[in-house]
Length: 599
Image 1: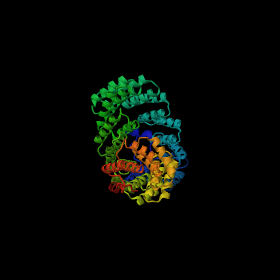
Image 2: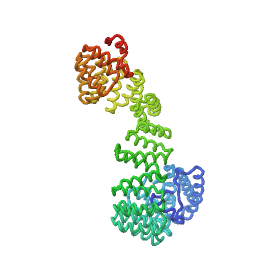
Image 3: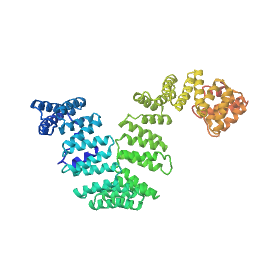
């Protein structure tokens, strides 16, 4: 039995008029057989009883039997959701019995289910004319009309149902809903008044009246209905909270706080009450009180995971923020405690930790999220990103490999995999991964440039300098201010002793932007060294050595001093380089042993 959406609730109020139905798609085969059997028996009785309603002469016994058989067969196909066959059988039955109300109803139902709304309305209207006391016929007609946006007609149909069918007052609520949907507020109020006169005062009437009064901007009347609800339901926190929410929505914050606190007395663990108070205190500039209520709400099991994530998502937009960082971290931790088996709890905690620079904790949170649900690409991407930022090369390779098994067409995962392989000194595999990923990133210019930058490094390591230079040039064409590419490109050119003027221009731009960065100063100095500008190289390296004792920088400084003829200071610089740890060249020990420059 097909019913309109607004009629579903009325069924439970009017069991004497109609019984609840289930959608055909939810019935088992055995249930359908049972229903079909019951329907056949009922329809035989209906067909026999309504033969008197037919227009024209009475049917012969044989025609009556054929008509009934076609009708029952049509009903069976409706149950089986084979609407073309259902309409075929029912249409043939109609040729015998056009005045049969039940037959018109079934044709209307099959037409509606098959999408033929016009026929559905026509046959349903005929069923109502033939039998004005059956509520199902009105309900189907109203649904066909409302589906075609014929709301005035649907309203008239409901009004007729309530008027013509005994014991159908429960449908007054549905009629009121239909008036509300059309914005006919006075008519909705009048209909609710009829329902209240018939059934007495009810919470549903009060709530609907509140909706209407609020739409009419009659706040005092809406609040009065709320007071009635609280008085009729003492000790029920939901009515108190609903009233508090109405006060809050209309900026009457002291009243909202008063009732929110009252709701908490009735239900101390109420997450909605804590959230209401948190928001009211926030609007009143009472930050400490607001944060206290927010923390209490997040510690409550009543706060479901989706609401918790939604609230934290609002904080993510404001992070990092020294005034909010700790609160966001505390709320994220509470979310994990309250929902320890929810992947999204750990994912949002990872987001908060990432934005507040707790990157190791963030990576751990993301990995826990993946234990419960590994189907989210974004979480895998965050893990790989953090592995790279934290210098966890082995983890980067493991996680990017696992992620690529699930998402082989995601360019960014190939990027991180290529970065990991480069860091593991596997440039051949790195170049292959990066080239594959680059093809997938064709529509993302920023990501393409990142691939080109890494490919420049990979091909340099493979001594394929033509491809390396082409990759760097492509990266710089996309972003001329990619300082890392400018630095690496110029340094590698200096090592090769090629295109030194171009190398100097690039390195100088980087040093001008970052005048105290030791790595960039070292690159610039080495370009000058290769151009035999030893004095300029010395100046750059001495600036770098103010902030670093890097072995490579110290060795380069020694080389420059040697070229300038200060061999004793050169030897001292080389010796300091050896003590500074790894990073020096393979020639350092020979330089120290022989007091001589090797390149």
